[in-house]
Length: 390
Length: 207
Image (tube, rainbow over all chains, first blue to last red; front, side):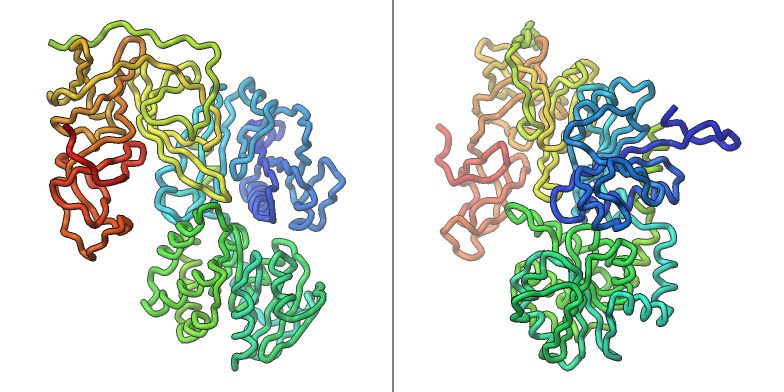
């Protein structure tokens, strides 16, 4: 029977089953988060996980070994299923996670209501540092069908569901960052060969009119910078600034002190290594934003813009948490930079101001990662939520 | 003597349509798993990527138990159409607030029942409110969308602004704090939107 906890010494009992539903709305945040979560639940919690994805093309981007044609495939221990437009009935799992408020198939919801054993239905929400999150995390959402549904909110403070972090992530990061040969080999594998002493910067962002001024100040600066740009939405802005008619993966262009190099879209594990290699990471959305924090390096967040400017409250809420412990001047420099970037405004002044506080900001990034790592991670939080619910 | 428990049956309405959680307002009732739940409080919040949630405080009208819940803003809920009657606020009799209808029937509600409107209940208020009934029992009271209240205290104008765009805190006689236009003064009467709790404009004293 599906959904039974494995019992020691009883090989006939199957592992506890989880269904994770991911509807790819845009970009790679939905699939990025759910794929990480699914992998971690399998690897660290010995769970039987099905990841239902409605867009396998997006999945293949974050998991290049996957086959876009297969309706069902096993990747790193996760049963990855295509979520078809015309849903075919399946037996529900013990725990069901609808990621980012996606809408489950009606037939699946009906099956939840008639399941032989109670099913825990969780809506895994978006990550936010806002105060209201702790007041909503874990609350029930009674449905008309008798199924028990709850909201699970990721977050950075006590009372929230934490953020995704594999158990050995920081150990692997430290090992990698303390091994120059490993870093060099990884970069060489991507075709990256930075000049000695050059500052490495990764750039993963949405379209941004503020990019021109930032790239110009990097080009005009005295510090050599090597900008690594994985394929993505910001590429057109980079191309415009470079005044090139086309820009492709592998391209390397030099403007003053700035070298710009276009990278392929890499797997999640390689993206982590890229972040660990860089001295500064510009990231976007939710998944890369969290991974950049774990890198323990200074970062710049391009938040997902929302109607009526709702994203500004979220940006400011995170800044309130993240800036704690920095000197007032460093706080001002970093927050000015983040605000300018998200407003699409020029960043020359704020970037230059940040240089004056670079050692402090770099040390702070490490401290922040360590502080957050002391909290329970999101996958463990979900499993504990289930155990408490039983 | 308190009367107020006349039998009033909810309207059976087979054509009733579902509403989204976002459309369900405080003092409305939703049927969830066959149980009538009074929405005592509803807070709309944008969660992420243009989606939203509504955090609700619900009271079970059969058991009297309360709970906090969260819904997606577009989750469908089944509203219960309830009887309503015009009432006015009479007096406070610890621990209840007493309202009276046109036939002098009195209805008692406690602080918990009135959570969403309590900030605007003041002695001497003359607003014509709506008492809400479930199976003959009064369960809540709705205030008019716009009410007029007097400022009990506010600081003087800091900037001399006359545009109404610069706001400052002010207190009503019951201690409720409202942001008002900078030009408002103590004893001024103001209009308040009870759906948002926000100041609308300066007003004439009620007759």
